[in-house]
Amino acid sequence: MSYDVIVIGAGPGGYVAAIRAAQLGGKVLLVEKDRLGGVCLNRGCIPTKTLLKSADKWRELQHCGEFGLKAGEIGFDFTAVAARRDAVVAQLRGGVEQLVKSNDIEIKYGTAQLRGGSRVTIQEQDGSCEVEGKAIILATGSSPVALPVPGGDLPGVINSDHLLAMNHVPASMLVIGAGAVGIEFAAIYQAFGCDVTVVEMMPGILPNLDSDIVKRAGLALRKQGLKMLTNTKVTGIAAADGLLNVTVDNGKGTQQIVVENVLMAAGRRANTTGLGLEDAGVAVERSGIPVNDRLETNVPRIYAIGDVTGRMMWAHAASAAGVVAAENAMGGHSQIDFRAVAGGIFTTPEIAMVGLTEQEAGPDIKVGRFNFAANGKAVSLGETDGLVKIIADAATDKVVGVHIMGPHASDLIMEGALAIQHGLTASQLAHTIHPHPTLCETVGEAAHGVNGDIIHQVKMKPRR
Ligand code: FAD
Image (cartoon, rainbow, N blue to C red):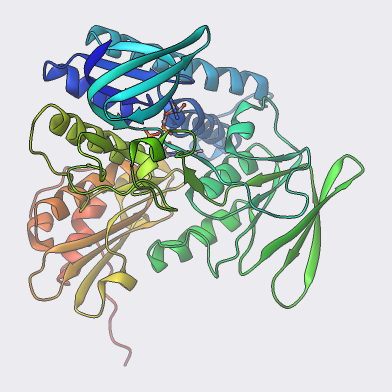
């Protein structure tokens, strides 16, 4: 069979690319070796955020007295929490299937391999077949990295895929890696009563985030009971009476931590092996498949998008790349623009960011900050922890970075993304009237703060 576009991998990059190519009139084949929706829907964004919602509701229930509410006996049943997680994933997967089918996209379940030129073989459960595509889009995603730690292959040492398949909360867990994935899992399981220790070899948690946010997030997470060891390496794991004895080293000495599970959350690697890249002549680097702004690989008519490129490992970045690659595969001239890709870390409170951090932006900047504690809506919600920080260019006043920790940070950040994408100034953002009472007033106030004219901030009088 011959197609206009063959898409390999049905994650948020691949299925979106398939839909866009079909919208443009292409005959499209989507190949998936596992389940529609990829990591994001089945083992990433959606199951974690569903668990987080249960964790948040459980926290709220425990503090309902603060809102004048009384509850009888309270508790949780993690089997039911996990069942809801799975039901949400299944519902959304059904939605993706409907979307794909309604666009007349053919789906084949099997493992695809490039054969050179326009040829692809697909190993299905009941045999293999060969197909041809005028264009091929590689969207095979990424997998968790297993660290080469002695004892790293012991039972009980798990990755994010394993943890999301578990229907119970371990009594204790050591998380290796304090990046977004590690911190999200740590916070969720801590809320359900797991005794969590996060070990990070870098000097701070959440490397690459703005330092103000890292400081505030560290305080908030420690207040929730998370133990975090930075500048510390895991040097070995040993079995100990059904548990795991983990040795950690902070350069000054070693320490033993006994836990039920060790979660490896120290990064992900592009899925490039077994894909036939060598046969097709597609160049590959350690971080993934290199592409240009049109998402073209070094081989004409073969495109790569999403995590497999090793760039911007976010679901929405993969989807945006999918649209661009599909348009080019169908003869268009589209380019990806990654200038203003916002990211979210779904702890409580949430963290979100777009653009440059203060460390990256250099000295020629103006900074505005506004605390959620001074926002009426946040006070009424009882969620006052956090701040909005806006960084603007000192000369032009253009917004170059927005960093938020606080309630609904992942929604509020879009104001920053719009500002950066369209070159708005802090003053333009500030003078866009923000409705009251809303959380987005914090963004307006922080934007005022860039030029020193915050309204809702107590003025400090100089001491006499
Ligand atoms: P994937 O989603 O990895 O999909 C690739 C697909 O290709 C898979 O289904 C795979 O089975 C298939 N495949 C691979 N090889 C072949 C082959 N040879 N033949 C056929 N099929 C193949 N991002 C966010 O934006 N927000 C979040 O909140 C968020 N939370 C996350 C939480 C966790 C725990 C994890 C692990 C990730 C999270 N991410 C989040 C990242 C997000 O999941 C990824 O960036 C996104 O899934 C990448 O999409 P993709 O389409 O490139 O690849």
